[in-house]
Length: 512
Ligand SMILES: Nc1ncnc2c1ncn2[C@@H]1O[C@H](COP(=O)(O)OP(=O)(O)OP(=O)(O)O)[C@@H](O)[C@H]1O
Ligand SMILES: [Mg+2]
Image (tube, rainbow, N blue to C red; front, top):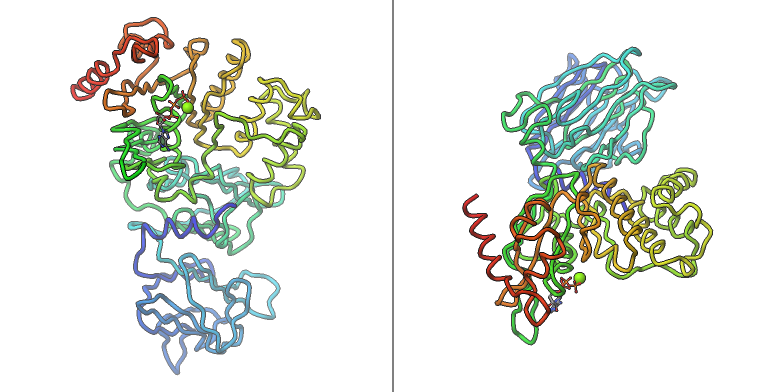
């Protein structure tokens, strides 16, 4: 379920450059542009290969790279030590196509250690501007952080602020992914848990390469610090850590007639915020949520940290947690089994049983479900069941968490404590969006309020986006719940002021 290769390709597609070959041999890096037919080998009196590798384990005529319009291919020339590719020793006749990030290795067949090995990486997804750097690794360095603004800084929006670390641990150097958006790849595979590093391991982060050489780390780093990406947590950097919503229209077709459910909804929501969605029945709250999640796409775009959720839905859907209006739980399972199954489905497939259990217990703790661990779902109270529905999604560690009326049917205290849980989740740096008809009991927990209303055109419009306090001022009320009364139609028991407020909000946005 975690798309290893896909994630690499997505990034690579964005930066598809002329192919390069990086060769690490005895701690030195060599870089070659690949084009046409190029031989690789060790230079001798008899001749000079196109790509010269100064190592005794490399044959004089070791192999050939063939680059065409269709990509690059490699063929071993029947060398004495051969060429390793994806764990196989290539035979003389084998021609293999190369993909971005592929690794070729030459290892002396007799040798026990790997210090002589030659490591080659084929790359088309390298950054536009980089230089090679080397950092010595000694034990008094506890940790080297790699990120957009920390430690080894890679000034690239596809790199998370604190992306990964190489750290010293009991049995040597290890690598960890700090829950980064685009992942860390070790020897071409997406890292799912911390691992110990071996000499000549190749780490790739958004096309930036790192060679682990046991006593040093050799890597590509950003050459210039672009002005628009500050090195510390600044305004611009923060603006990338957000959800940017640009919905032009969301239409449905019925009997050849177009019906517009939503129109012109634009906003940016920074990470770490808990957002309330408010509006009368039928205003389009659920429709809006579905459009933001990419579940039912609208005309427009929705981007999370600069990545388009609509275009890259297959990858982005793993970052989304959704608790619908109706529960989807199996009544005959216990609370524990329900959560364990969800953890198994949503967490990386190589999690051990112990790791999954730990996550289940932590989640039960957070949602106050520990005492119900063995209870059957069918026997839970409404509030417990709702908390379980949320826990089932939460356990997958979503970055974007959408909840459609999670507090409906709960008493005041229960609803309040549930909203406090959601606040805590937002404080972990996630975005939490909640539809609720009774938000006042959690008023101060929300950062922003989105108000939707149906205009006279029978379409859902944005009537307000801002803080709860501003919302009350704008609608001249002292309670969020009264906002809905202002905009509901008169035949719904409201004051029928939707269109007036839609225009007032448009004016307010125009005037900044
Ligand atoms: N697929 C669809 N085809 C036609 N109309 C639809 C479709 N989906 C939603 N609608 C209409 O869009 C409007 C908004 O529906 P939505 O479910 O988003 O409302 P809501 O704000 O979530 O309401 P509630 O508070 O009752 O849940 C309604 O008038 C609904 O009938
Ligand atoms: Mg709804």
